[in-house]
Image (cartoon, rainbow, N blue to C red; front, side, top):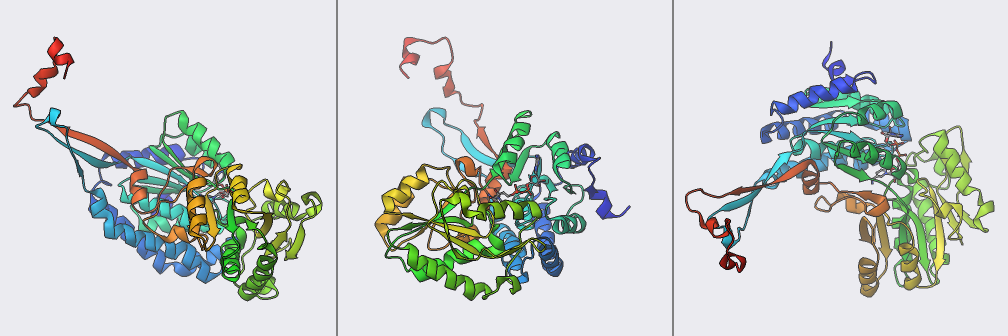
Length: 467
Ligand code: NAD
């Protein structure tokens, strides 16, 4: 039996896989910092050595361009590993905590301990990054991990299942491929943490399954992330940034601007500049551009076309795009203007290359619009006004808030990444991943020699009651 088959499990064996990993964890093999660093270095080597294979798999699954695949998937994880290797020693160090005088003499500290065996369930849209960035945190924190890649990105799933066993400790890391039945089986198993990335409906299934064993969860979900554009902002630059963030990966990014709130009279200029930006990035025929991706499958393609059917949209106007081809699942970068806030395209996360522009009279209306809806994963502001920035910061809630650029906050290693409310629960990246995948244990050490605590032992006296 090859190493690959030894750790790539099938739907028939999730229980055996989890038992094997739990047994390995109990031996303590994952605890030494040297083991953790060795795993991270091996993962880094694998990503760089097999960069072309990852690019090919991502192209097969999503039509992803090779440069984009490197920037947003393999390269992203390499950067996460480098940042983690650089700081891990410091992050893992016990922290001294002051002890109240009443307890002296004593020493208190917090100690990080790995949780055990964790389950990472990942989606199809960034199928490398969203499987491996959590894995970096899980390994750095000293855990065993089962990875369940998305069945909707089958080439990447197969590649992960093939390559990871060659790079990582097979007793500590396993890949379980499959869809709903396999994930359901996995969710029956005893895990010490479940890290799920995907939609909120399945997020609820995961959380309900976790509740049966009181297993802690991280839910990295999505939602409609608005881009607020104010008069006074450089509209040409804003349109370029919005187009880049939106149409990357054919709009299938959890942090992509979902819609634009165009304040005052900004909409006409934005429409023009967005059209120009799309042409600059993907040419006049994006179907022929090697840099433009495809919709992941027929179900999502049909869903997006339904959103594009503007009969129910109160007369939304097509600014650019709309062309499509079901055989290749191509949907052109599309901008809709004068969109009714109640139109179907405004009711659910779009998760595809359709950008509606909704006009609002002022910042008050924009803030009211945002706060009346679910808390988004990200909120983007394009404004030259410090006052507007302050108001967006203090009067709205979102997983992240970024001014002037969408998606890029993910690449700041010190920033936590995660949602709030409907957009998720918990956070990760860098040191925040160590928080997620560790238990921070309180340790108090009080010598037995002296015993000032006698002052509070029963029998209680009036003097003790006054302490
Ligand atoms: P998906 O369909 O690949 O599902 C995600 C995972 O859940 C897969 O591994 C799948 O096998 C599993 N799954 C699906 N149905 C299940 C069920 N009934 N029971 C148990 N497991 C099940 O991906 P998706 O949900 O379509 O992903 C897109 C969504 O994810 C969007 O809402 C997007 O915003 C969100 N997302 C969030 C982030 C983030 O980091 N916050 C990143 C990417 C995507």
